[in-house]
Length: 399
Image (cartoon, rainbow, N blue to C red):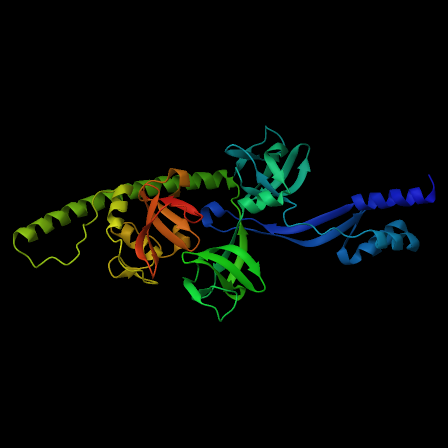
């Protein structure tokens, strides 16, 4: 082998020795609504047993070769490859879920589950198994069940969100402070990101898509991640307790409704005061259909930002909160927080009374592919069909 052949072989070996590292974090989006930022922060080159950062690539290669001429040639011809933020992200592609095991084999203890389209970070390989980290689970998954480094797939299953960190955030029609205000969003809300550019973030709200200053939001990417055995057991226990509490609340609501109807009948027969111009029936029954029936009475009433009155005005989460309060169920006054109440159901299996969550908005499903919701100041409380007129973030069931 001549000198040029040796040089080419050495260069190829060095190219194969590039090791890329990135920092990332992933948290459970299914339960907490919090996602992950996957970023490439560091590029390292390893030759033999020595590692240096990108800034020291040429020096490390020179030291390995021991000749300035060779190091200069490598520095000129070789460039550090910047790692994509998706390179170490793997997405589960399975019918339902795949088990995360303690060792790289079918005999390993099951530590948790990674559901279809959920994400994990690949830490290494062992045979035909990947060592992964996802949520609070770290273990092994057979490689055939994961799609690694597929940026398009990761983008399609991840959700880019902007968390509002100011009291009342103006959403504008264009990316400047002189443009029209489309709507306002309270602190703590979580909005779906459409686009990011030049210090502005385009987000989705009920009034449409608009722009907010990046100064007032924190952007991150949410993925659904693995659920540990302990977390699954705790979730199932919590859901069962919530079901029982909902049944008790429904029974109490039915008793109150029965008593209220009796009192109303008595007042009528004794010639009480004149009925108001618009009357509302009290909650009757204790299931999702009863919730939907009760909520529908208030269609036509006004939307009021921050309001909770079903008659004088409510915003979207205030409307849902007050409807369920009539059935003895306490809910938060926040569309993002409502995405974590009760238990989740698939959008394809929605039933009347289910809470349907969107980016910065929420409504109640009433059946026939329709929701009732406090929409905007211009429209007030109204019906909208189809229910997926906007991307559905979550569907939560109380009864």
